Amino acid sequence: MKRAILLLLCLLLTGCSNAEEDGYKEVRKAGWNFIKQNKWENRTRGYWKHSKVAAYTVNESQTQILDKQYIGKKVLSVEFEGLENTAVSAPVILVDQETNKVIGYIPGE
Image (cartoon, helix red, strand yellow):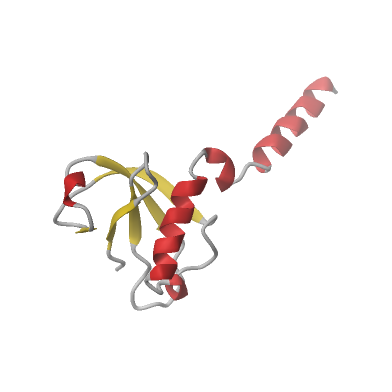
């Protein structure tokens, strides 16, 4: 019985976690603001909370870089869920993890 209660408690706690609790809330917001600023929100499904954040090493040939000092450096990429049946998906936004400044993007496909 105790084991069942403990298992249920663990499931409830992990099931309630969300994107805001992973420490990337401001990074996601910076990416979403850049999406909105460029009027790309019609290419995404959801909102800033519905994005994936990952480490990314800036490569000049794959990205549109706003600040060249980041070439070869690690930043965070923010990828928003795209809509089905769109010609071009939303770009992946690159954000400096220290300043939450958008430094570039990878164009959507």
